[in-house]
Amino acid sequence: MKRFGTLVLAITLLSACSTEAMVQPTIITENAQLESETSDGAIHYTEEETIVLPEYISFSELRGETAFFIKDNQTWKMNIYDQKPEFASSLPVRYISEDASVAIAFEEEDHTSDTEITVVRLQDDKQTSIGILDNFSIRFLQNNIIASFLYDQKTEKQSLALIDAKTGERNDHDLSEVWTSLQGMLFAIAERTTDYYTMATSDTAPTVFTHVKKDGTQVPLIEDIEIHDSTLLKNGNFIISGTIKNNSGIFLYHTKKNTLHLLANYSESGYMTFYNISPDETIILFTTESDIEHRRNIYAANLTDNGIINTTQIIADVHSPDISWDDKTAYISFANNMDTYTVGKMATLSVKPITFTP
Image (cartoon, rainbow, N blue to C red):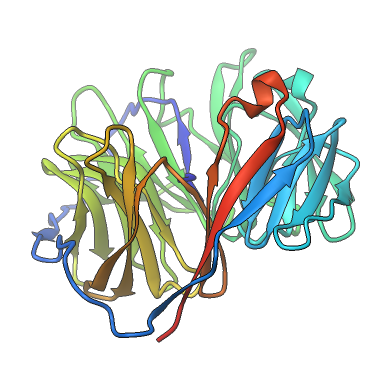
């Protein structure tokens, strides 16, 4: 599953996050269940569709019913049902926002640390340059915020650039007072350009999930944590995939109650559990390890303020899927031939639309 709405960057913490006391959240584990029933008719399956893409494409990604792909250094789109390719952009896009409204484009031969980046509005191919960014770290975060870690070799200063893809607003957060080298890991999540949340690390203190405000003030939230992915929900709570206090899995962090609900455990072999959330934040999909090696099972559940309910397995024994949404319909896709791009074979993509109703 894609890592939607997050950014992992390399840096190390120099100073403590904050001197204010931090009360550790209570970890609640009784929600880590995988056996339950949903009400009749809550999930509707549509017959699986197979998309046939042209030969010699260099990229493909699904957003709802639309597959985007690069051919001849241009971007094309194709509905999974009518399968008629349409021109999308004269530039090759590499990253597409969750709502498929904007994309990030750069030339493949420019895949170096510092690259001229262009934002493409997919509706009409309007193109806007947003300057030089590090395309190894560039990602879409929430609300079409673009993030990139920057390092100036002349000044040896490090910064985190946050750009609003819709408006062009940009804020560069100076990290020189906080981070010293490229040995640690910075995890960043943001829904606006002015502030962000990060997994701050140092050699002498536990890793801390921290809110970095516009003025640089750091507010510690959770200590002793390793995050693989996280989503800031509209109600201010977080979904976190990672390890907290030796508990590994997917958590719901309730910010006001300062509680952590363990929603799903990692497998005993340590395979990471992926998740994906519907646009209205009422449904969560997540994976667990299958009995078949290197395969996963996919579960669906209703997401509430206090955890998850109605957990149901919906797909078994599949490779890691890509998931996108259109309202309450999840489009779950699987590549049928993994070596498509290296040998130029005809690409096929299996897509299973699954609709959830109250």
